[in-house]
Image (cartoon, rainbow, N blue to C red; front, side):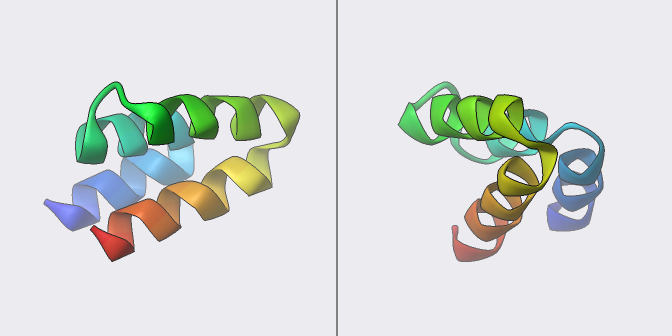
Length: 52
């Protein structure tokens, strides 16, 4: 399942975080980071997926 989340995170970073943690603070932080720039959102999404 982590592979699927990782692939979805590469395409749309908030989607991978949503599948991992739901609609919590980490999801909204990732949305903001993705709006500010794709790569900060991607790095945050990969970090969330591998640490949880």
